[in-house]
Image (tube, rainbow, N blue to C red; front, top):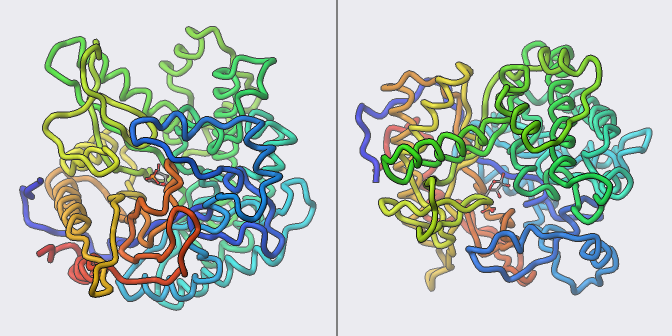
Length: 492
Ligand code: BGP
């Protein structure tokens, strides 16, 4: 799949670990003063792998239904994997694998039951403080995302999510509490998960429900909401630096990669255009200003983004320390897609690449694309990089021997580690760490399935809420321990 060009080698202190997000693991959706988030309102739907748009469609009617749902209704994020009550056991397992870092997110609605509350919810704060202490006990560095796809429901209902500029002030109040109370335990922070994602799924990223926007074109509302997140992100970077000069704050992007389908010039142009759209907002977070091509895009669509005096300065002064990203798969782009096969991917469709294998969900596995992406990102930004999501969703089964045999996951990991090593040693990329996505099984973001499993640890729970939440180590558990123990040099 990918054979390394040079010897396998990783820098001393390379941060190996795993990643999760509050809404996909915690459960306990209404405990200890937690307010509702938009994720608590997403019902389970049976959807084919090539029809993601149905999954992301969400109306005010769906919201009403969620608010009146009875206890038997299937809202998978409400229970998730009950990490809220299992975190000690889970962190112990992470430590057993040798994790140096654990990426997780804080749920805003646990810290402020309602974002407009004047005082934070101490029970929510205590939960995270205890989790960080638990990590520290094992020498695990927490890497904390402030916002991972879970806008507070109160923000959605009262302000139409991030469309309103009010969201910035409310978010900063929340960020300040996080920095004040968690700062003593946390050195690495991310502001918004996959910051470019609002353009693909505005509900979970921005709390924007399309049918609530009859006064403004929905696309314009999305650009406006993106602007507010850019300002909030820059302000948060600055606030954190002022409070903790040693802390490192990064941005987080969806690292998609579209190869030209052929060497036809029009396929190359189409791929270039698609790739630029991937960088639109990360360019702002790293370089401190809107790129001209994004301003043109907004202008050419006939939209305006309202910016206030001082916004440009905020963006200039709030650039990030490092660039983090998710990477799962690649696909192609063509000038004319007529008649070409399409492949599903991480919340988008691309032209299918005939040279790549696919996962059970149609995502095309491509370790070389990881090396390509690392080089491309490093050349573009000259900032340290961090792979904060990479992994394989698969239908694991508990075998008759009570174990989970997942050679496919070991293989996926092995070849991506080889590609990383070459990016570092052959291409000169500065890479700080690697956190495998869903180091413990969790609820899928795009499909809301438990059966799309990423973990090294199996969780006994199905798509419909049946299960005991029991944790079982998969075969890949020992393999990842070996990878970490050898600092990425023993992959056999
Ligand atoms: C990323 C998200 C994660 C995660 C992952 C895998 O885009 O940041 O939250 O879920 O993709 O996607 P999925 O869960 O849809 O398989």
